[in-house]
Length: 414
Image (cartoon, rainbow, N blue to C red):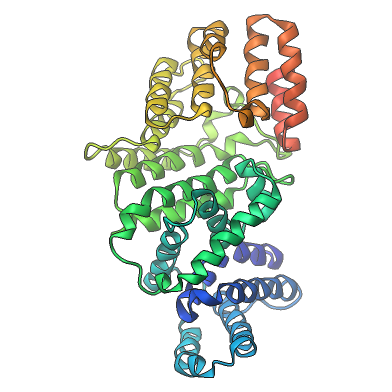
């Protein structure tokens, strides 16, 4: 691995671990300083590693650099030397123990706790997501705004609100009550799901897929599944869903980085081992009586993985699962996806029919997704005028060049 690539790898994968560990060590009241110290350490690595030798223990190097910066900053801020006197020896002892790229049990506990702390019930859900995506995954405010369909100013506001609340209730980092874990588990699932979604279809201008985000989401979910606080069928079905999707990533992208439609993908490139792993987790998720959106979505993804060709896809079963998904979580996106699946099964008119009396929200009406689906359905139905109207709208609103290319394949046959 080249030095620059290694540095970027560590930026993405070590950020959350360092933030979680240092917050536990010094307290969440120093969250701003922790974030700053971690970012400075990672930027120092980005600058020095490409031109110098990579440290024998990169994680330890980052931890030491961040810790030293943090200690200096806390000294300047508070003058509360007694805190450092009590903790500094322990902190520095951790440096020698820091493994190269490991994910020891102690750090796993920090990450799991950090996920649940991010999902404090007194913090609005939208702010939870913004905070977790930035603090745990290193997302930029711009990426978060695009992913959540909000303005950057709004994203900054939500992030600041969550950060300030959590700083005022810093004790949770050290003492999170046991009864809080099940209450916050659904929000933790949603955060992991959003991280994966960003990797599977990125809003980043430079990358249509971000495999490292998918890997990070799966790593967090597996971490959760191995923790007594995350052992639930919803966790297992979410893992199954992610494995089914990630198994097809190599076939979703051409050599130039463009996205490939499902019907045009080379299915021999699908990773059978990951599909098999997905079915193992899906089977485990079937234990018990609970049913979640992740069960329905995993079942849909499983149907695609089972189909030997696009023509052999069991669209009737996919439609049934989309209907269950709509009954489980009322989302206009699910109605839109069911319309597409129904069009594949029964024809474009059937898909248009279930959208005809649909009172879609403004944010969906203004998105490229809505315009693209209608353009496709009207095109297949032979209504050229309506198809052209929505096609133009879809291209105008597409967030990335890769998305525009995908629309060109679907709507223009390019």
